[in-house]
Image (cartoon, rainbow, N blue to C red; front, top):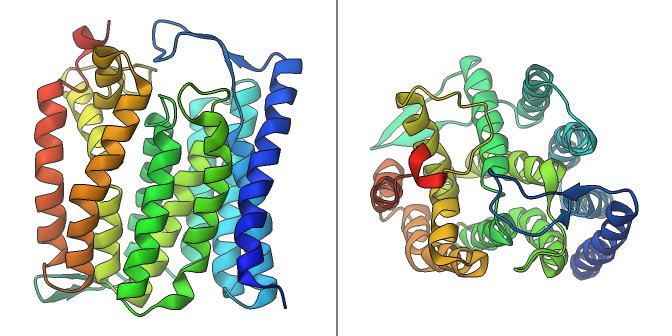
Length: 340
């Protein structure tokens, strides 16, 4: 039997060393992100370091399964879809995968994940319960595809996506403690450790970028964890959505504003609220730390209230998101003239 407390440092050290190796590989093979008019950085930087998160977490998750800490169905529900998403991102980082094939692969991975979590859990709101049955598989797949893509969209400045993942995972572990579901601790804590190992290299100023392989993997993995948590306690789905609030609101507001403006939403841009603020402040670190502060001071307490049943889930999400939406619109997220 492998002690769980050995798996956490294994995940952290594995990602730490793996990122260093990937950085050396990227430099020797000219896998460099060159700044352009759509970039939020100014210096050429190696990319693809998120593969270290993928490998470290997958190895650790399998160890958790072998040790009996985590059911194998959940392990495979994370490992198999996550591996497919990481592979697509890796190929895209090294060349170019057409958008239609990427999207097809994303939905295939999401469908696979929904199979392992047995569809969308029961949704509860304002004392009502909603079971979508087979239709829930489709709704859940769309949710996972959106989440993995928005995580990719939000990985545009140093440290932001890494800090967000660590916060959400740590917040999820706190919620599980409050919900008396200790069996759910292991995977988010392990993922947080793997991301922390990468963050050493990605904290502003970043020495390597995550890349599509890492950001897409984090997006679908967090999505699967949120759905699995909801199958244990329906309130946890709303609580996880609150924890992810900054990323969900920024990406969604930006998308809708660009749609309303008649822009091609599939084209690369730098009009997310966090990108605009990084240019206004001239600091990636400041924006990433402000987002972390918002998470800890605003979103975490609200997610706890929802988890404890003090606040209804839908109401909690609405209260959590409202000031974030106002802030995104005031910053003028999605407006082209701001980001040129």
